[in-house]
Image 1 (tube, rainbow, N blue to C red):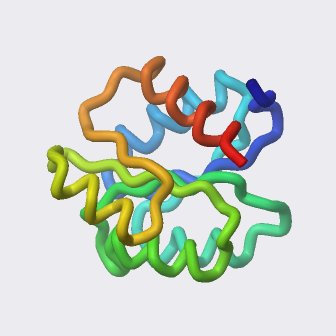
Image 2: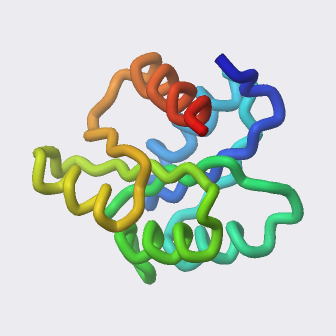
Image 3: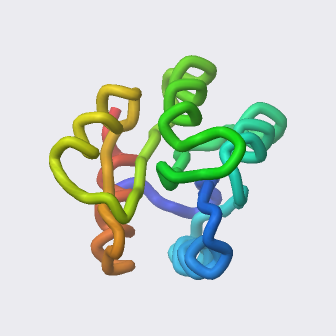
Length: 127
C-alpha cells in the first residue's frame, strides 16, 4: 500500500463539523488536507493549489457548485485525480450517478472512519 505521507487530499463538504473531523482523521493518517465549504471554492483550490492534489472527496449536496458538477469539472480538468463522492442519500442509483459523473468511487454517509480510510487508501493505490 502506498504511503499517505504528504499526499494532498481536498475535502469539499458544507457541514463544517463533519469536514473538520474528517480532515483531522486524514491528517492523523499522514495526509495533507485542503478544505472547501462549497463546490465553487473546491474548484478554486483544485486549480490554484501549487502542488498535485491526488484525491478529491466531495459531498453531493453543496452550495454554489453542486457535487456532481464538481466531479464532472474536476475529471475534465485533471483526468488523473482520484475522486470520491459522498452523500447521506445512499443506494445503487446514487452510486451509479456518481460513477457516471466521473468519480472513482462512492462512500455513503454515515461511515466509519477506519472503513473510509481503508477504502481511500485502496483507491489511491489504483493506477
